[in-house]
Length: 446
Image (cartoon, rainbow, N blue to C red; front, side, top):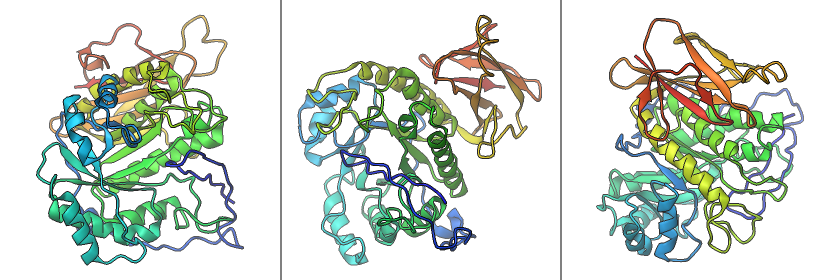
C-alpha cells in the first residue's frame, strides 16, 4: 500500500493525508491509459526555446497579492530573480521601471468549464486575452492553472493550442502536482485523477501537448532537511521521474521548491536547505527554478524572504546568494544537455555510477572529523555540451551540516576545471576543493 500526502500549494494550509489501496487487491497493476509508443514527433510537440543567456528564476505566485507598488518589483530585482510571476497587464509598466524584462502574465482560464470545454470558446477567450501583449517581446507567456487533475488535460490542450495560434512563441504556463497528491483509490477525492504519478505525467504530455513541464515539490522542507528518509525519497523520485519524462519527450522542465516554512511544524529555512534545492535541480538538468513563496502570506508562519510587513528578512539574504549562483550556473548549463544523474551511495531507488564518464568521485571530510562521522555522499549530474566535446559534472553535497572535500576520477584522460559559482570563471582544481553543506560544485572537462 502506498502513502500519499495532499499538497494544496495555492492554499494557506497543507495537511498530510494517507490514500487507501488502489483497489481491494493491492497487487493489481493499474491500467495503462496512455500510448506507450508516443514520441515528441508523433505528438507534434513544440518545446519552449529560450535564449541561452536567460535562465528562468522566479518567485512563484502573484508579485505581492494585489499591491501594484513598484517597490515590490524592486525587491524581486534586488533578490536576483530573472523574472516575476504572475503579473497583471496593468503591472507591466511598474515591473519594467524596476528593471525586469521577462514576464508571465496571469491570464487564467476565465469562466470556462475545463471539464466541459469546447475549442471554439477557448479559442475566442485566448484570442481576446492575448491581443494586446502577443507581440510584446518581454512577455514570455501566460499563466493558466496550478495543479490540474487529469480530467482537465484535454481542455488545457485547447488552451495550449490557442496560445500557439494567437501568440506564437509564447508559453502556456501550467504547473503540475507532485507525486504525493492523492491518486485514484485514495480515501478522498483524487487530486491527480490517475492511478500513478507516471500516468499523470504521461497523460498530461499526450493530452495537453505542453511546451514544457513544471511541478512543485516541498519535501526537502517537509523532510526536515533530509532527516525523514521516506519524505526525502519522495523528493528524489519526483525529481528523477520529471527528468525522465522531460527527456523522453524532449521538453524543458522547471522545478518549484520551498523558500519559507509552509507548514506550521516546519523549521525555518536555512542556507543549506535553500542551496540544496537549487543545486539538486541544476544537477538533474532543470531548465528553470521557482521559489514558493517570496512575499509571505498572512496565513503562514512564514520566514519567507519578504515578511508579512513587507520587510526583508534573513531568508532574503540567503535567497539572494542562492539566486546569484543559480543564474551563473544555470546560464552556463544552458549550453549543455543532461546525460546522467547518479549517487555516490546508491540505493534501490537512487541509481549508481553508469560508468560512462567517471571512474568515481573522491570524497572526504576534514581530517579532524573524518573518523568520527560516516562516509560523505553526493548527487552527481553529468552533462554534454550541445556543441563541441566539452563535458561537465556537478557534485551536490548531501550533508546539511558539514563541508566535504571532493575531486573526480575520469575514465579517460582530460583537463578538469572548477567553476566559481559567483563569477562563472573557471580555474584548475586546488589541492582541496570544498563543497559547502547542501551546496554544489561544477567541474568542466575537456
